[in-house]
Image (cartoon, rainbow, N blue to C red; front, top):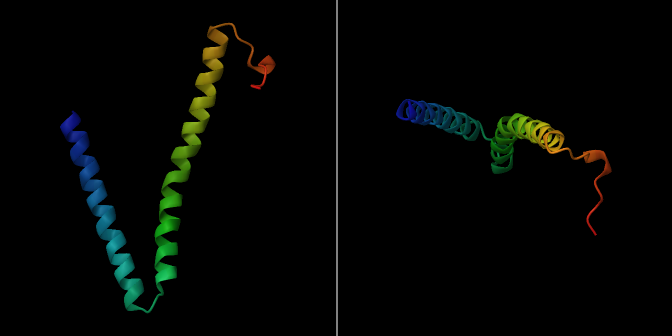
Length: 82
């Protein structure tokens, strides 16, 4: 199972790398500046990472609350660190 998953990730990464390379090549061929190309790449990175960060923060908050409830700790009355 692990090898199959690893292979799928490599294949997906290969496809996205080829697509990005083609997009950059077309933009440069049409006269885009380095700034525009860099902006395109950074936008793609932010577009891909934002949902993952959001899901991670939501899961972390939920797990912290669940852990506090299981241990009998009220998170609303936690003293701030000095």
